[in-house]
Image (cartoon, rainbow, N blue to C red):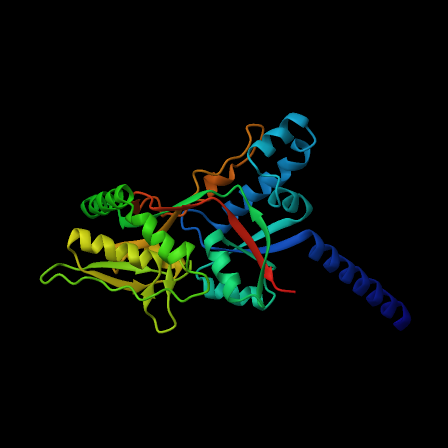
Length: 309
């Protein structure tokens, strides 16, 4: 009897190891910063619907051509067919990187400028695996619904900065030319007697949204805020929140403005795709409680990052 039990345990162990190996090969755990207008389950359903539709679509010549027209066949779709991605939301970049280093997830997904900065500064820790060409995105400031006066002030300042080239100059200085440097300190102009605008930043998209080791907010978004404060003749007070706490900071009136909210309306999928469109679940705003400013920064590509081998 003992021999039979030992044999059964051996079979179960072998089967378990085989199953785990198969799971490791066919399932990839992916980390992303929390999207506020959707849930992990809704996001996962959109991703699964896309994967389910891919295999039959990619055997049809017309459909293949359409995928190529959207430049989607590079990297992401072939990877998605090979392995199912299980999405995990993280409320901060620090927690997500910690999970990647600990082997709790296999990869993380971030905007291209963030990945280039991250990997340049940590080449021994992280490496780029492939690109997601299907992820054009813009970012905006968020305001509590009803605070339209402040939103309009920001919109007018952003439009003026686009028109006179200030946005481009700040982008070149704090993103394109940053290399591996720590972003320089940004100084805010003080206006005597002006009511302060409290702005929540996360530090979760360096060098776009950057908080230095000493707790000082700097980088691209802080430079944008300093310029807006100067144009509005308003004092700016920066507070720090996690990416997952952005809407809560507005709802509790801890902050008047939150940087950043991401919009993925530019994401495209072919007409023959049936199922929940991924862009319908990639909503980064609490729709009932937040209104968004004019977009002021955009990127075309997200990159997938893993641990350096």
